[in-house]
Each structure stands twice: as C-alpha cells, then as structure tokens.
Image 1 (cartoon, rainbow, N blue to C red):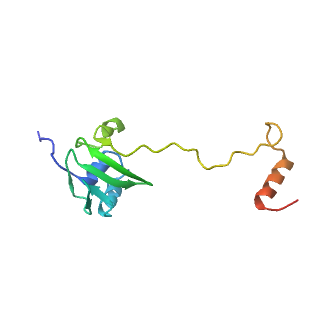
Image 2 (image 1 turned 180 degrees about the vertical axis):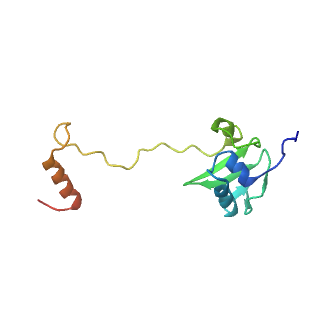
Image 3 (image 1 turned 30 degrees about the vertical axis):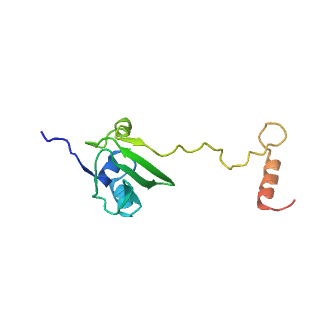
Length: 128
C-alpha cells in the first residue's frame, strides 16, 4: 500500500476541497497570480500545499482565506471536503437586497388586465 502524501498540488487541493467545480478552473486561479500561500503570491498550479498552510484566493466575488487542515485522497462528498480546511474568512453581513418592495394595487388581488396595462405604461414612462 502507498503511504499518504505529505504534499499536494495547490490546484488539486482546491478541487478536492470543492472550492472549484473542475480542476482546470482551480489551475486557472492558481496560475493567475491572485492566489497566495502563507501570504506569498503563487503563480504555479503545481505549488505544494501542506497542512497548516493559509491560502488566500478569489472565488466568485469573494476573497476566501482558508487554513489547510488535511490533504485529501480523493474528491469526495461535501462533508468530507469540509473536513480538509478551516474557513478564516470573516462572515458576510446579512443584508436585504436592494430590491424595491412590490407595489400592491387596491386589495390583495391580482391586477386586472386594465391594471396590468397601466403598470406597463408606467414602466415604459408613457402616460395614458
């Protein structure tokens, strides 16, 4: 039997920990130069990661700060992947979306055909 690895490629670890859907996406992020390992910029997807390293990388619109706790053997289910890291990112504040409330017409009923036409004219900026 082979012994467990003591180091793992950065792109492979990010993929196994389920931060990216494909390994090629993880490799793109690692190669872009926007990924950091222990505060040092990394520009190679093959950079070795060991338990205890702190990774900083962009994911969608967020910047993630992660501490590597373990190296995975495979890309397993989500609970197995979550055991590989500790999230050090500050929690995002829960804010209400900037969506205006729905304007209700008289009563709680659905708008009639006439009301719908008026709403459409209002949205276009036209006047009756």
